[in-house]
Length: 76
Image 1 (cartoon, helix red, strand yellow):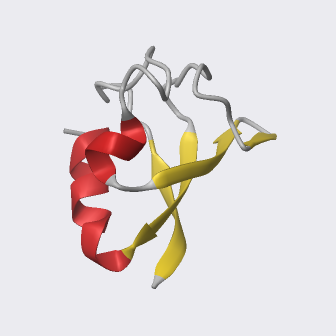
Image 2 (cartoon, helix red, strand yellow):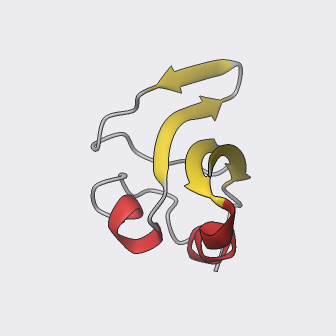
């Protein structure tokens, strides 16, 4: 069962400064980013070239069984 999850990017996340495409988010995690909450803005359906910033909250669709892998990838 797929569910929505919110994952915050810490300052030390290796994804900060990369795009969704360059970090191969879906390929590496199996999860899909459906939106990014940045400050008071929500970027729906972000493009693969959207840069990721510290403090961003990724709103992802993923089954429960891969969540640990997603969190580990985002904030390893």
